[in-house]
Length: 249
Image 1 (tube, one colour):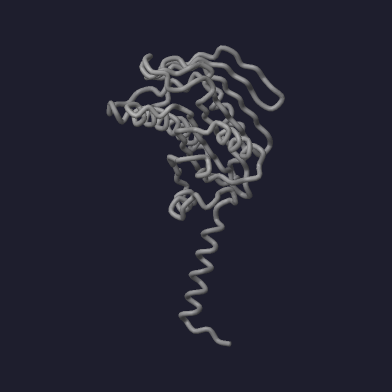
Image 2 (cartoon, helix red, strand yellow):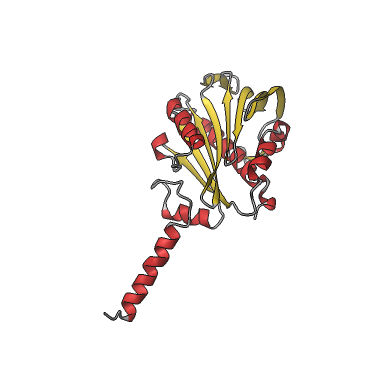
């Protein structure tokens, strides 16, 4: 049977499309759109506000990813955002070690630039950062720090990390109540989580950050609180995802 030019062209187009769809590591579900997949393949970052944990784009049997999913689902957040980027493994074999050193240097949190949409000005994400304790565990660290962030004041923060040969896990949790300009309690203890997971999937490193906040939906504060929390979480993840980018291939 002979194939005409149109059929050959169609077969070639389908083959190219299938190749594009399989170019990404098998770590994402259908919540990631075709356009977002293309951005990741082009080395760009994908940042999304989500309505619920079921809308998260990450999908992997890796224990570190499952842990992140379980933490977010258990929290049942009112505010949720994810930040995703991928890097090739080849040439970036030391990424986990480098990332761990960067994100555990809590003093550098003060220098993270943050743009306030409301004030239309640049600020430091945290105005102060003080480590109160740091304990080495079998595969990571447990840190307690006081991080000062306007308009919420001092956030007494627990930081837990784990690192294996093919994954890194970071989770920060507020240990005190957070008040909006010292007036309205907007987050109770342990109801704000920032999680970063880096996992090797095939020939790639998948970098996945998620910010989750369980906070009451006060009608006159919702937009301000959502903007404050979500933009800060996105800023934090973006900073550390890009911090060592010049070293990556």
